[in-house]
Image 1: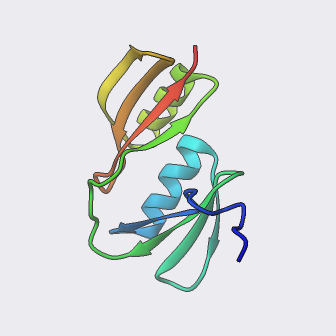
Image 2: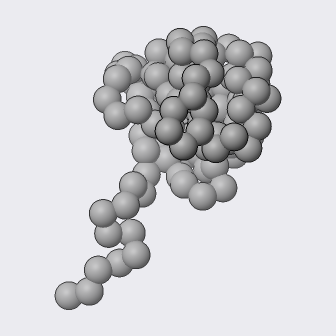
Length: 116
């Protein structure tokens, strides 16, 4: 038996959201993600490298912290705020770069980081 290239790698993320339309607008405006609807209760997202999905259900904030990369941290922080996100931890330095944390409209906390 051989292992695929995807063995032990994060392959897909799913979020329960109160409104698929709100999630789509937020992540599209903040990060430029694209979307494919699969019926009224499921929407797949693509960031250009990873795919995942939003499904209609009770939001479950918490769990693993998803960290997104950005070449322009200041621009991304502004885009998150304009899209309706709430900054929960302003930009700070850490070994390897800088990042900020935010919550999306359903209360999920994520982070965005940059090497510079």
